[in-house]
Length: 103
Image (cartoon, rainbow, N blue to C red):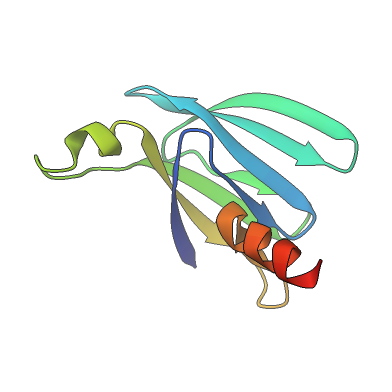
């Protein structure tokens, strides 16, 4: 299992899927899911797992910070990702650097 924290507006790629964190509130996370030319906006309750394809499971959890990062924590969600080892999981900022280096 891999755990990645994303702030509102940040995305990550899991295999052929892109997840973009649109927002969060105390009970759920709002996510844009992009697969090919399909776009789906979904609201997922924390601790409720959802599947991507046949072998990828994503579970959002609220990020809990201390008093020093509480404002940042309010805009962040931790994604618990279960996927086979051959499925790449790439944060959007890493993908941007890779694209820039290959150009």
